[in-house]
Image (cartoon, rainbow, N blue to C red):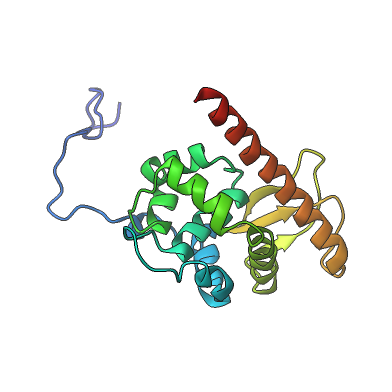
Length: 200
């Protein structure tokens, strides 16, 4: 044993109930180059007026912002969270989704209704456009396709969409792959609704 060093085992302080003078915000917990920030940025740039127009009828209780709700679904699809029930869980437990939602917590029924009504006929285009814009900005790279579906992998602090072949120069093939993935995600959502109907 070196001179002056103790052979006593020591541990770092562990205090689960420590009270912060200024609690950390979700903003501080998310890396600057995280995919969730890129999705947020791209959808803000897109402008989804077609979706907004569906919200123009007045009356009733205040609603969640449709842009925020759309971001939740797009980021959910990109991270393989395709179920409204799992998305509702994520906005309560996952810091990325909590940040994206601005700490609002839409429940399963609200998310489900939004997906079934407001995003009907729009989700596919928004998702495909988001992916293409992310690729054009260099935030994600389209490479290889795996038989088990779309996969996102970390790569040097960025994110990689993985495909069977390189399809960066072939928009039609890229569209086909993205739309096929959307159909897979939609099937999860539909099966969830069938289950929900049977429970009533």
